[in-house]
Structures are given as structure tokens and as C-alpha cells.
Image 1 (tube, helix red, strand yellow):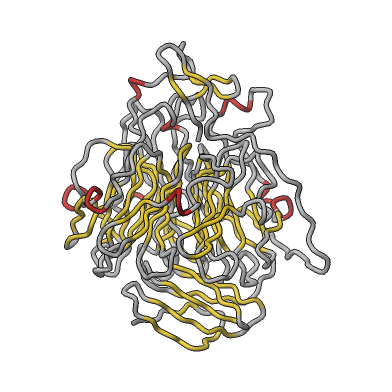
Image 2 (cartoon, rainbow, N blue to C red):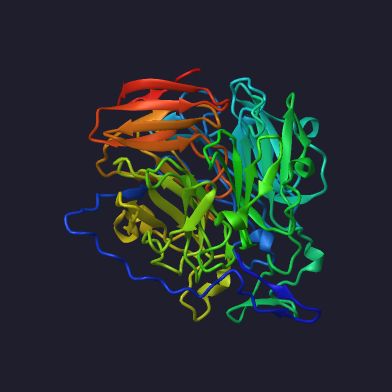
Length: 552
């Protein structure tokens, strides 16, 4: 989001988060290379997904907390083998403390869904933001953390019925604005710990509104203030001690990073040493990168790693983030969405915990008018190379009435992976589900009908969600069901794909835990797994078209 500096009598123009970067020309495909057919269509309404997102009123937006939107989770909460959908809601205004329903849809099969919110046990909440999932008590049921502007909510899943166990299991804290989160086993003791990002120390009494005399502005429009000019935050790490979470932020070294505006959390082993690291996409400041020192502590190395700023050394407005091995070199790369007048950022993992901004080189710097949120690496055509999808939407409804080349609702973006470290933009030809315009926020991907193709669920502000399915022909596939922190390698014809099972990501959302691999025309593939404790299993060659559930 936007940068702002607030003076004693006037709020100065916002713009730190935008670079006024010019879009590069779209590149033609090399001779002999043909893009696949991609046909995403929105089938949410046909499937019964009609709940309207509550994230303040459509307009006016008076405070920044009303603009950031909500997350979504794809989890099999009832263990019937089908992914269900949780849609997170906030509230209609900061003064309205009436708890709002968090909408849970049970997957009935055939991409049809039933609203089971009333019997789910998930309580109505005041101002929910994001969500992540993990089995923190190791009972075989997927639990949830819902972040809030307020107190976070830990929901224990007891055989398909959730109970709020926040008071018993989470540290007592002052009211904070939490955003992204992730369950992870950072200390490799066999249970899942919890990392939570925080955004702004928000106090409406101390912030000017667009209609106030000392308002904030963007391109001469009176708009909501923040995040710059507002107090930033530090991040939180909670260690799992027998099912209770203890705040170890200070001793672990994550609290030392102060005055940041944290959004989406990525947890993965980025340097291949077997220990989980933590990346936080931050708004209007350098992003954070915590390298696991393997002794219960982390070192913040964002700047020195090359993954905190863009190639110009500029801070960006990081919102969404996703990790994936787009170039097939066996290392997890990072893609981050940013504000309008800028490009998204692709950080290529060069090894040795060094990253390089390759956005322009990869053909991704072709649009600077989109304001990106949820993002995902996914293999849409199942050819064995990770494509890119991200959802967009402005933060200021006022842009629709201004004489600007901006719009509150925006189309989505899809980039096909050419297989040569470059992407080809197909946003205009990837189906109506991509070209339709919404003010989107959270996003998650998962195989909702178990046919080997990943669906995309998107939260749209002030309307129902989108459920995108690709109806175009695709290659063969394989999925692997493994615990959080496991790394899965699939090899076909000498080319290896890497996936790591992660909690959180996208934009404050939760996707399918199962690792998904496109195999192209191949009918079998070799599968290798490195478990969270470092042990390795080689399954040899297995047949395509199945979900593997290996056990150590």
C-alpha cells in the first residue's frame, strides 16, 4: 500500500511505495514455441459460493484497516478427502463491534458447496484479516489461526467441529493488527510453532480521514492515511510447548526488526540446509528475511540477501507473496506483488541465501497499472513448469471518479512459464475468469475436485468470491500429501521439480497442503521426499494421475 508522511498541520503526498516505473514492452514468443490454451472460468455461483465479503462499506474508506481485505483457506476440515473453503470477514466500520460470521463452505463433491458456518463452531469475529492452518496438537485434524485487528483466534479442530482455544493456548497480548501467519516447525522438535506478521499500530483517534482538514492525499486525491506516517510493528514467533504457544520473539531474534509493515508470510527452507526460514512481504519498507541459525534463533538478512528491495534498491509496497522453483534449479524462488505504478518482483534464488531481482529479465515487467494482492505459482497446463497468477484491486474507491488511468476493480494477471526462465503474459487470453474485474484481495489454490487440476479461490471485496477452474486440456499430473515442512522432488525425463509443504502465503491465506506436479505427457515419475526432521525417502517411479500419501 501507500506511503504517507503526516506533519503537524498537513499530511504530505503519498508515494514512497510507488516508483513511477514504466512498463516494458511485451515480448513475442520465440519461433517454434506455442503457448498452451488456458481457459479459466468463474464457477463460484454455480457451486453455491455466494457469501458477500464484509470489509467495511464499499465507500467511503476512512481508515487503512478498511482497505487491506481478507484471506481465504482451503482445508479438508472434516477429513472426507475434499478441500473445504473458509472465507474470512472483517466488519462494516471500525465503530461497529458487532461480530461477523466467518463463512465455512463444506465441499459436497463435484465443485458444489454447502454453507455450514452455523454448525462449524467458528465464532463470529470483529475484524478478522488472514488465516493459516496446521495440526498444532498432532491429533490428525487441521486447526486454524485467524488473525485480526484485535486478538488472534486459535481454533482447534475436534473431529470436524472447531473450538476457540485462544485463551488457553495463545499468549495474552495487547490489541494488535495481525495479518499473515504460518505454522512451522522452526526448531525441528516435531511440533508446529507459529509465526505472525503485524502491520500497523493502529489508533483511529490519531489518524486523519479523507474528509478531514489535514487529510492524506495520493495523486491529489484525499485518501486514507498509511502505512507510512503511522507507527510500524515487529513480528511474533510463538514456540509450541505441549500445545500452548509461548512468545519467543525476542530470544529468537525476530522482534529486533521493528517499525515494519508486515503482510504475507512465507515459511520454507530457502537455502537447502533442512531448517525453515521466514520471509515477510512488507508494505512500503524493505521486506524481511529471517534465516534460521539452527539453534532456536534467526538472523534478519533481507537486505544482504537481495530479496528485500527491487533491483533499483527501492522499497516497494509488498502485499502478496508466493514461493516456487520456477526455473527448475532445485531452489525455491520468491514472487511478490506490489502497488500500482510499479511492477511485481521475482527474486531468483541463486543459492547461498542470495537472491536476484529478475523481474524484467523474466518478462514480468509489462504492466504497472495493476495493484497486486494474492499471488500463486501453479502449473496451469501441467507441463512441468510453474506459471504465475495474481489477483488485483485498488485500495482507493475514489480513483473511479478521478481523471486517472486507475480503477478500483481490476482484472487478474496470468503468466505462462516458457520453460527458459521467462514468462509469457496471457492475461487477455486465459479465459473470462482472468479478464473479469474485481477488487480482489486474498487468494488460495488447491485441487477442489481431485481431478489433478488446481482451482483458484479469490476473495473479492464487497461481493461474492471467485472460483476459477481451467477448462482447457492439460498434461498428466501427480500430487503428494505430506506434512508441513516436507520437501518433495519429482523427476521426469531428467528434469526435477521441487515443492515444499507450507502453511500460509499467497496474501494472508491458506492453500492446499498437497504438493502438485504437472508431468506433461509422462505416465510416471520418480518421487523423493525429505521429511521435516531431515530423513529422506525415495519412492522410486510411481504412476501418474494419483495422490500419494507416503509415510516415514
